[in-house]
Amino acid sequence: MTTPQELPRIVAPSILASDYSRFGEEAADAQRAGGDWLHLDIMDGHFVDNISFGPDIVKALRPSTDLFFDVHLMISRPDRYWERFAKSGADGITVHVEAEHDVAQTLSAIRAAGLKTGLALNPATPWEAALPFLDRLDLLLVMTVVPGFGGQAFIRQTLTKIQAAAEARERRGLAYHIEVDGGIDAETAVDATSAGANVLVAGTTIFKAPDRRSAIQSLREAGR
Ligand code: DX5
Ligand code: ZN
Image 1 (tube, protein in one colour):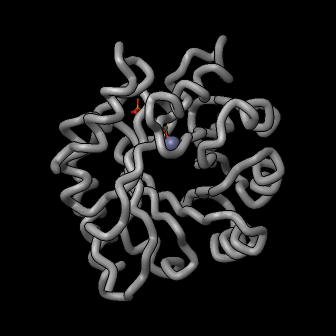
Image 2 (cartoon, rainbow, N blue to C red):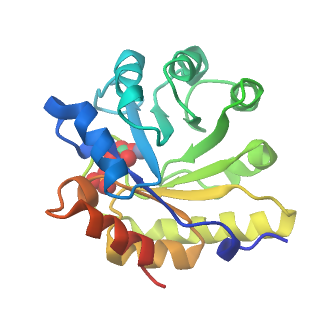
Image 3 (tube, rainbow, N blue to C red):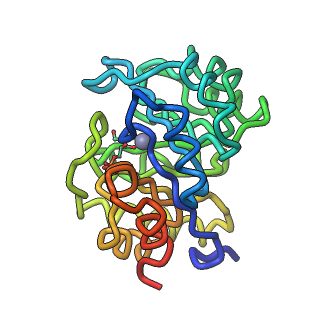
């Protein structure tokens, strides 16, 4: 039986908070500083009220690092676009349950292409929305802020959703990662990991830190 403790702690710097004029160097630096994955936030100005970058930029970043590319699609039609991100070097693709698509079908197609699958839930979306898809998931992303912008405060009410995700995983003998994204720092990481999260996405806490290596280290050790 899988327990949260058995899954490795993964720290995923979110490139959204980096210096865009030095995008490639920032990606390389995330790896040098000890990051495990690189989290890439894709926003279409429709699903969320912000626009970030697209598949060509992801492709341009790919040679800068060999970190796992954890691509988070905050877009209305992930079914139309996920393949372009796969071709650009994504290793895992996370789609939102609230987006306009056949969720089961999108997840199956991503998995059939040999990529890791992820499903994201906005803070206002109840845990039950994920239930039909759990056995198709390598990762469940519990959004801990309303998606769209970095630098927001962690929403504590999401902790019960993390607990429900961890309990269901154990009950069903599944092994998906539980990722948290938004407002993660050394303090909120303690709460999120004790609720059952093992993948910590952090933008501001890592990229705006004077010492990125120690920022990553503090997330890796939070609550231990
Ligand atoms: C929010 C994004 C996050 C964001 C997190 O819409 O999905 O990945 O980069 O930023 P911080 O860590 O600054 O809250
Ligand atoms: Zn994200």
